[in-house]
Length: 309
Image (cartoon, rainbow, N blue to C red):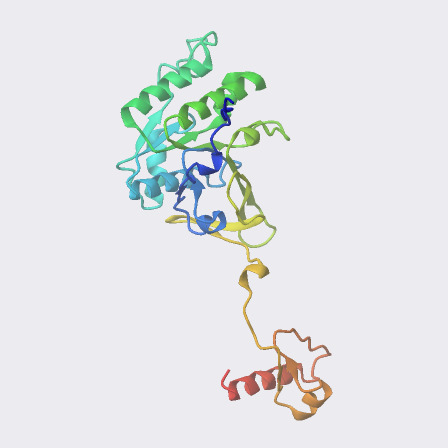
């Protein structure tokens, strides 16, 4: 009897686990559990002034420190402006490649055309050819694309815009590049086209407060295949770059303790409490001014010091 051959596809579980790329931003890699997955396309969004350019430069400089080549493709800023931003943080961009997609001829008002090329030329082919040339010459491992707002205007309609982003995603994924695309949220409210395409999404916010300094925070909205700490995390921009402060989650900071009674240092109070305070619990001292709240609290602290705690 003839045997039946098995034509099932190979077990995908045997595929190697993708490696991570450290972002170089203090605190963010902790939130992401080690960094972002290599060779994927990510979206970094935020209104102007939230720190997207600083984030992108830190990402490239971290790769450079690990021996990875980096490319910054800019449609919104000049190479001189990027170097000025780096200088303000005490960084040198030597070793990184800066590629401007705008030249003086493109900005000539005598030409009735878009910023890059005449409208009859496909934006996708134009962008792809420019990046392909840079890719073949520079072979970067990390790429920053700044920014998507110009591409959105040039695309002229959502369908064409989505196709261009998909083309860029496919182009870079086949060349082992980790790509970070910057967006300044100029799209219509509720437009989640980029969120569905990107492998991960990080959102930056800048909040003005009535008193004190402004507040900056970020949120990892999406990160495929990675367990991350959700919610908002505060961050600061200062000389030296961005520093993120992961939010505290009580369940991640559990400590063993002895569930026993401990003396307050006042025998009568211990009797009222059934032996004293229970370790690992909270106690509220309430009362008007002058009844002895501070004295009682200090006596409890002194009793702990006398026990060698």
